[in-house]
Image 1 (cartoon, rainbow, N blue to C red):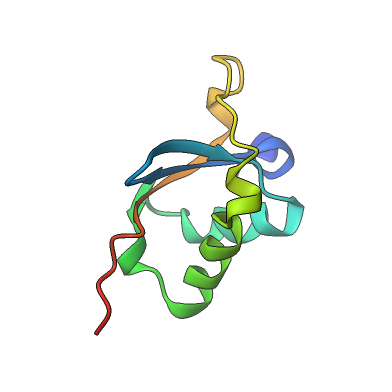
Image 2: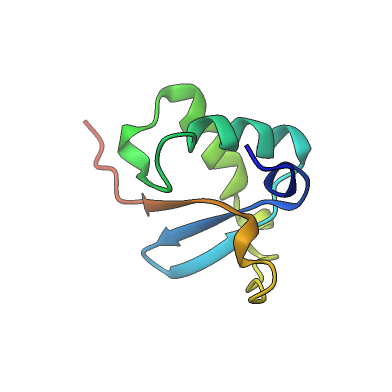
Length: 91
């Protein structure tokens, strides 16, 4: 695990509306590093309920409103990429 990702890491989210980068707090970054420990890209449906709650809080409208595009210098701090947000079908 890289210390830079723990201190400054961000999550890239691909939704139906487009791509967004979210800056999580320290605790959220720690949890995301665990979720993305083996893969750099994950679809939302493979996450368990607890992980989906974390993603739901990160992708809340008030947090997504503060989306930003990381510079080339910040790209190495990417924790992971989450795809398929908002595409789950109700059972």
